[in-house]
Length: 242
Image: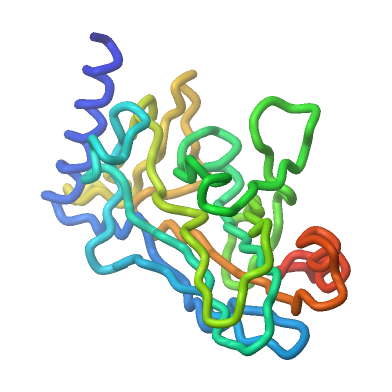
């Protein structure tokens, strides 16, 4: 019962901020056209089913997006091979580090193996699938990012398209929100997420935009036995490496 009250109070806080005029562009996309990297005679296209004009993140109740679809932002990411040669592909998803490490913003990607993907674990000694890189600088962003890596396990044939790796982005239901009127004019200028442990995340202003970046790499499959061998050889670094 206590958890339900907390969830409802957060939803009410979000609505209140919207009503009194603050701009809540909670989730914004990035230009996918510049985020495809290929090696070999292949033509890879990254597709995203996402509408930034209607996206608003709210806390979810439970873990099933089919039951609470209004509280998830659909960001379905697939990759298509439009070339004539088969290819191995992998996709990076970048989330602001402070929101990731504090369990605020989460990625819904259940059932990856059945859809032909694996999520690479960046730290086998820590519970759960960890990011493959942390505190990465992305041009134009003031906050660092954590990177998650999805690798398609089989070669992608010519004219074939993968099923989705990432499906939804959401805010954990245990997260609260503290709004502030920083100039005493009645307008909420600042809002900070509060973790389940009561920690206020003051390095991210929730009245601004939340950017989640996606980038795909592809390499021709010829000459390689596995996706890991091919992609590791072709791309020793992540897309935002200096």
